[in-house]
Amino acid sequence: MRRGLFPGRFQPPHWGHVHAIREILREMDEVVVVIGSAQFNYILKDPFTAGERIWMLREALREGGVDLSRVVVIPVPNVENNLEWLGRVRSLAPPFHVVYTGNPYVALLFREAGYEVKQQPMYQREIYSSTRVRELMLRGDPRWEELVPRSVAAVIKAVGGPERLKTAALGEAEPHKW
Picture 1 (cartoon, rainbow, N blue to C red):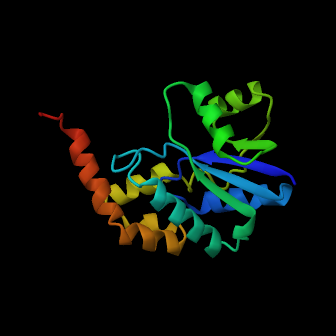
Picture 2 (spheres, rainbow, N blue to C red; picture 1 turned 90 degrees about the vertical axis):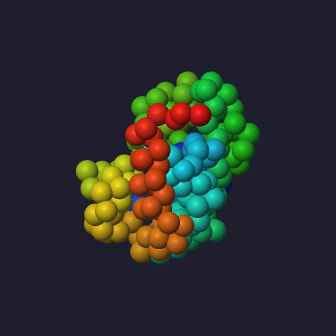
């Protein structure tokens, strides 16, 4: 069985992620999706919990017609030492053969560890980006909902995502005075 690895933060998952996973599954029997920065949540860059991101991603893939039996999703926390992070990925993920990433640094880490690395299939990157989704939410612009599957928008609304993001922005704009 050929298995690919697809790491990302998925803050939140959008149509570009669904497209990338579909494309990976054209080459691989299975894809292991790494939910990175799993320990971060309720902050501007990482507003959603690992569990919420797994939930959103599964709903997005289901809505996108992806066979979920071919997808393994694992959360992996970040650590300061990148080689230690690589070791965590290897210990938490089932064996994989190819790494798909658009991040040059992640590509370097895996390539130096002996893995084949391929450019993540990008789908209209100028439109579909988690950063853009979060920026639109923060501004109260409803167009963010066009960038994610309906199921993801429903989960984001159910967990109070736009309000959480606005609160995080307020908290990060002011220094803490404990």
